[in-house]
Image (cartoon, rainbow, N blue to C red; front, side, top):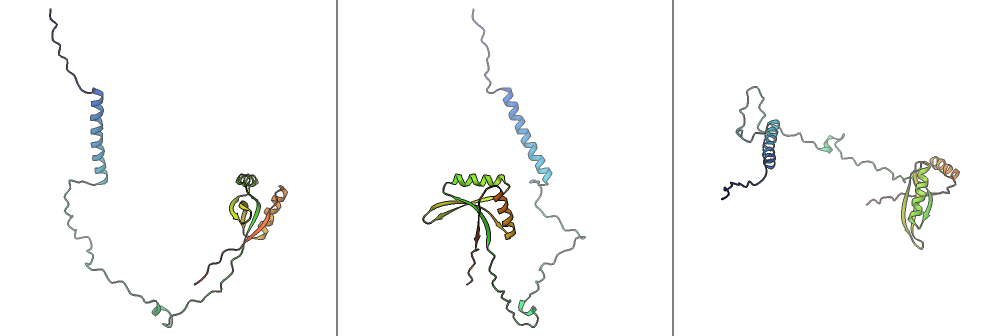
Length: 176
């Protein structure tokens, strides 16, 4: 006996995928609608400007001219005056305490860590010294006064760390 012909229909996709796709589309449309409503931007609104109401003041068509000032006429006596030149004061030297200079950067880092354990902030400066090569200097400072230097120097001496006072003269700017 012959088998009855079965009607098999092949559907592409699953109902879950179709539901997710429809949900995303509806959600995106709702999000755009809410955003346009919240910001007041309506792309379908007429671009005609609203008629001015009678209660609002109307600004003049041309702005008022700004007042003109001449600096030399404002000065007393009407004569141009040269600003007084201040004598060039020599800037004070910056004071540092140098705790060490090392060829190996790891040694400089170790000393910096040891100083940090004492509560002192140190900086490592790398310099190329002629005849000695690259040195990594561990310095504390700059200090505002010699009194501050002596306080820190005493504290370091108590912890068996030898330091050297370094004075750096600031580079003066040349005037042309």
